Amino acid sequence: MLARRQLSRPAARVRRSRREPADEGLLWLFDLDNTLHDTSHAIFPKIDAGMTRAVSELLDVDVDAANEYRTRYWKRYGATVIGMVRHHGADPHRFLHRSHDFDVKPLVRAEKGLAGKLKRLPGRKVLLTNAPLHYARAVLRHLGILQQFDALWGIEQMRLHGEFRPKPSAALLRYVLAHEGVSARRAVLVEDTLENLRGARRAGLRTVHVYHPGTPFARAHRHRPGYVDLRVNCVTDLLLRRRPLRG
Ligand SMILES: [Mg+2]
Image (cartoon, rainbow, N blue to C red; front, top):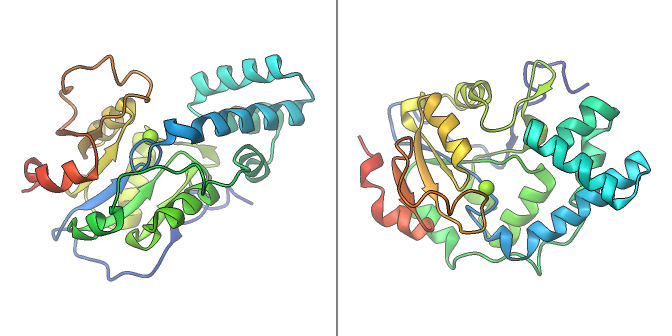
């Protein structure tokens, strides 16, 4: 039963790591889509089609009706799966597998040498994505960076008191930090979605905006918002320009 624990279950551990004291190094919370890889290039259209198919099959409605449900739940809850669970009793794991049922290998596009770049970034790295875990793991594995992360948090892990609490939930961020044993001031969220960065700042984290032109509302902000500490275009930028995040 998913709701037995305060959060559904601990984040998936990639490997056991030596826990650093809270005052040593930073904890990097990395988003996945349009942050570590270019999801807009070919994957988002696949997810869109998969979501519509999954909703259509589950509710036995046509494509237009399925798209209406998707839009409604995405706007209301930040993730279609939440509406499908809450209003239609969907099994979240089955729904997420059906909606992300494709091979990522021919579709993934990302900057080169990501593994080496992440390795050179001091501090622990944890993945924090509102996407499902099996999909996140497949993308990281294909990029050759799965082992760079101490833990993976997907949408399945983001349940608090039985309710989904994806980013930008401050309660989720506080839970993740407590679980990782790090104070908010030693944690950095690296992310393309500004609303999630705004939520992170409210919870006391530092913030890095990875600009991606395909992310909704990204183009509307020509300047760095006050809740963003650093704005970059890629992980290479982060390596070179992370000085404002120290101290
Ligand atoms: Mg993203």
